[in-house]
Each structure stands twice: as structure tokens, then as C-alpha cells.
Image (cartoon, rainbow, N blue to C red; front, side):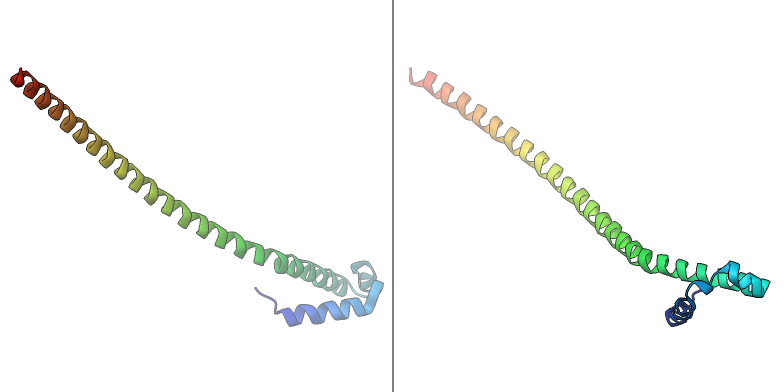
Length: 115
């Protein structure tokens, strides 16, 4: 489960207050249970310090991943639009070329009729 930050900080304050006496080897000399408990406290403090550093990075990663996903979706939409516009342009160019060819044919026919 989650250990509240104020509990971890209080444990850190007590551990640091005891200095080098707060280590599993010294505590085991007094009591096996105290030795195990001191080791657990030290590890919880270390774990908390890692989580405090990692959680913001995990959130940043989630945010960046979401931003990337949205950008990729937008890119897909833009590429589809570009494809559609290229197809329309190709159709218009073909229609234009056909109209020019027809005009040239009519002009050539008209030139023949004038002679």
C-alpha cells in the first residue's frame, strides 16, 4: 500500500537523528525484530525516494505518449486529406488536358474550313 509522505519523512527524521546507530547490524545486536524492522524502514525510505522521482516521470511519459498519439491521428487525417486533394487535382488536370485537346481539335478543324 501507500505510505503517507509525512510518515516517511518522520521515519527519515528519526533514522537520521540516530545517525550511524540506525542500521540493521546494530539493531540486531539489541533485537532480531528491531534489526528486521530497521532494515524495512531503510528500504521503505529508499523506495519512497525512488517513487517520488519516478512518478512525475511516469506522468510525463503518459502525457507525451498521449500527445504523440493525438499527433499521429492528426497526421493520418492530414495525409488522407492530401491524398484526396491530389486525386482531385489529377482529375482536374486530366479534365483540363482533355478540354485543351478538344479546343485544339476544333481550332484545327476551323483552320481547315477556312482554307
